[in-house]
Length: 340
Image 1: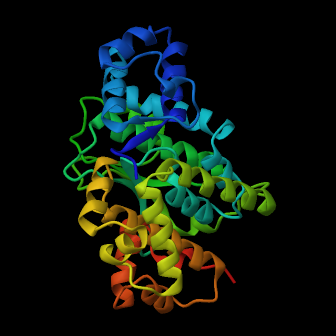
Image 2: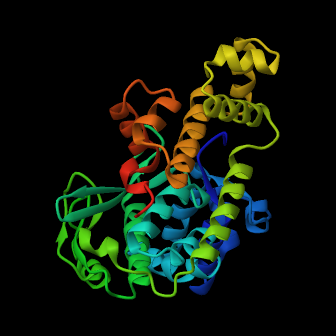
């Protein structure tokens, strides 16, 4: 597992391009944020920047821009530029429906960043689309929240070719002095001082077809995305060895406690946990990751009931599995079952 939540090189490059397009001195902004302009994150497409450093860079960028609606404008531009070079967005563009595209967005969002993850809640005829932090107690600043909502709205526009209309947009902060730009950006009723920042759309939009989707290309992209995630989260470390051992144990129905895994790896449980700590990981984090990936694979393959998958993963009842799956992915496992 990564030592800390991280942000992809692609997201950093988007921020850089946006600021250079405004004529800003990006080197000076990096220096103000305490980040070297020679960092690998600016040259290696698989490099990652710690989320805390990205937040500093973002806030310095907002300050340098002088734009009071920096988040709204950057989010819109990010949605425009992402489809050209992102495995994640390319996957979404090749899903048969908007709903399945959003499922891939939730499932593989860690390719972009893992400090915040998108989530979806269905309430009757409406769907709430928002974000949840992976860092306990972290609440994204207003400009970050606006970037995420603006980006999400842009992706929906792109997926549905203008057919997905926002029902309303909710913000977790008070109404600014002027909300004209918010109204122009979202073209929907705005609600401030809400419990969460979310986009609300009609559930029926989830079944809209994605134009020119390609199932064969989707399969290729998804295979590549899985390999990319594995490289991000597991290198040849103790975390990698624990992850492989856990995966094998789960699939064979063997006990997966830390003592059993440590015995397989020839160390004591205490020593193993110490080595994982040095890598910035915990046994629980790796177990959650492996359980999530195993669950997604079983759901995608079909042939197993939700109850079977729950027991395979070591849950005593399906409801506990449902709650864990919602925490891992932001959606219900039923939504990930193959469509008839």
